[in-house]
Image 1 (tube, rainbow, N blue to C red):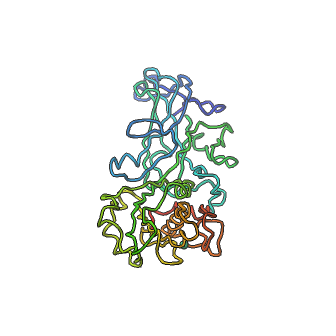
Image 2 (image 1 turned 120 degrees about the horizontal axis):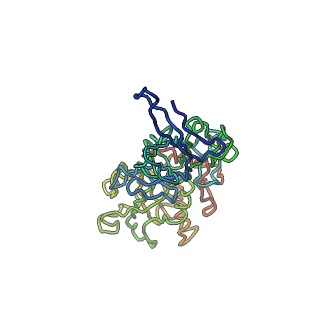
Image 3 (image 1 turned 90 degrees about the vertical axis):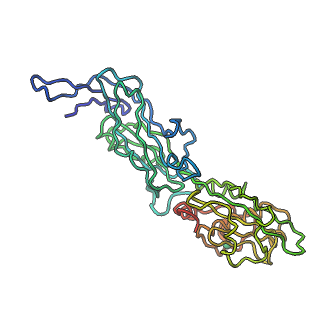
Length: 373
Ligand SMILES: [Zn+2]
C-alpha cells in the first residue's frame, strides 16, 4: 500500500512518507504522508568526482586510462531540505531521448521521420529507477547509469516525479522535441538538461618523404579548422595523436612518397595504439605532391593526401588541403563520392573551397559506425 502524497498540479513536489504500526497488527505498517518537499533539480554528474557535467557533453569512449569511469554517469535528484528522522520519500525517474542537439542544421533524422528517437546506443540503469531519500541520505540521491553502447549524436535527458504513474506519463514534447511534457497533469515536469554523447576522432598525422627533385614541401596534413568544423556538427572532436617517435624522425616517414597502392606496407610504422584503446583512430598521411589529378585516397583507416593538383589550383592553400582531408576521412567512414556534385564535401569533382560540410544523411552514417572502416 502506498498513499504517498503527490501534488498533481505541480509535478515538482516530492511526497514524504513514514511508516506506523496499525493497531495490534504490529507486523504491518501504513505509509503516512508527512509533508511536501520540493524537488529542486535533476542533473548529470560525473561518477569519478561528483562534479556536474556543465558542458552537457560526455565522451563514453575508452581512453588510455580510467576506462571504466568514462562509460558511467550519475543521474542526480535534489530536494530542498533534509527529510526528518524516520521519514523517507521517493522520486521515479524516466529516461528520454530528445532530438539530436549537436547542431540543428543537420536536420531531422531520416530513419525515424519526425520522432525524436535518434539514439543508436543505450544508457542503462536509469529508466524506471526509484530514488529514495531518508534523513541519512541527505538532500541528493543518485543512480549510476552506464553506456552499454554509445554513438556520437546520441543524447538523453531524464525527468522525475514522486508519483510513479505520473512519471510514466512523461514524454518528449512533440511540439518542442528538446523538452518534456506530462500527459497526465499537463504541467511541465522537472527534467534534467540534455546530455550529448561525443566521440574523439584521433588523427595520427604523418608525412611522406619528398619525391626526388620535388620543389614542394612535404609536411603533416592540417586538421585544425575545416576538418574540426566538419565533424563538430556530428558531435565528433578531432584531436591530433602525437606519434612516437615523431614522423619527422629519420626512418619514421612514410616512404616512398610516390607509391600509394598497397596500404599494408605502411601499417608497420603506424604509431597509434589499437583503435580499441582510442575508439576511433585514423592515420592521415600528408604529401604535397604526387601524381597529376590525385587529391587523395584512403585505405583501411589510412588517408593519403597528394597535393599536386591542390598546389596547382591553390598554391599554398591550407584550406584546400584540409578540405581534401575532410573528404578523404568521409571515405574512411564509407561515404561515397557525390557525383554529380551536390552541396557536400563528398562532391566529386568539386570546386575546392566550395563544399566543406557533410549532409545530414552523411552525418547519420558516420555517427552510426563504431569506427572508420
Ligand atoms: Zn572522393
